[in-house]
Length: 421
Image (cartoon, rainbow, N blue to C red; front, side, top):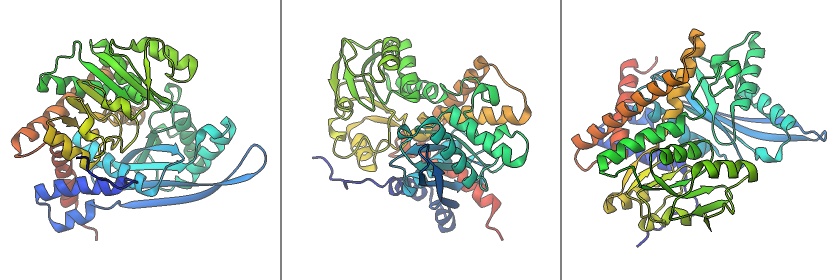
């Protein structure tokens, strides 16, 4: 029987529940639990932007820093009509654990603006971005909080933020953001980093779970920057990608979809709809089709108590943030379906963001081959650390193991630094 869930899933409640589970297992002291359950800083800004027609519109934006005890805050900025403060809080907390699980010296942050950027002209989007950057300029910086791209943001938007911040200071400060164009201090390999990290982790998990990559059926929900890269790399490794979904719907073919053809078709037509040789489905139904590897790469809350009992995958690799609810997790554990959690699976993006930040600070840049090799080492090392933790702990799955590892690292840094004053 499917577990009944509330109509609206609160992502921050989910994030805190995941933390509480790990904190209980770690037997964290009350003080550390109190500190780590809440964000350190939350900024809400309401700001005006003049539209092309002369009308002034008000926008609401957020920047939340969850924890900075291991280093500067790090996290993306999303432009989306459904952005909420609780969503940004959850994403900031997940960023804290994500940075800790791959052991890079950042804390967690996230930002967002309530806007549908598709309804803005390019000039309106630039004005809105620059005004938002100005509003949060007091809390971001290369030594304090480094934004990056997220949903509906891209290298161009990061360039506008970097330029705005730099203009305020009178000189260029490329390290204030990551995910920038190469021409202004971006890093080779950054655009593909998250999807590439998903592939590395999926490959290692398949080896552990005894799933041969050659011929393995794969379904990827989400065909944006992350999902498309992960799908292509899985396809190149010999997997049979049988299902793909984008914001307009989903396509399925039991014989497999050629990813290079799908990429060209999507670029030419704006979506995957009506790709020859495929059957149309909706983006929820595609999740329930038979496969060995399911990669949710869209948004949070896709795998829930309502559909977890119908999922037919052997392995779920979370390319999106928070795609699996706690209720679905419980069902997957009972059914023996392994879930590689988001804080590990999609940490490739923040890892290469760290590389970009380091390169900007030292004014020395690495080749794409070197970037990818460093990324692979970190992702494989982190997966093995989580796997070992999972094997060492009783009644432990990959998510709990990742949280035990991450929370313990952040808790140690917090305890060592102490409470000021």
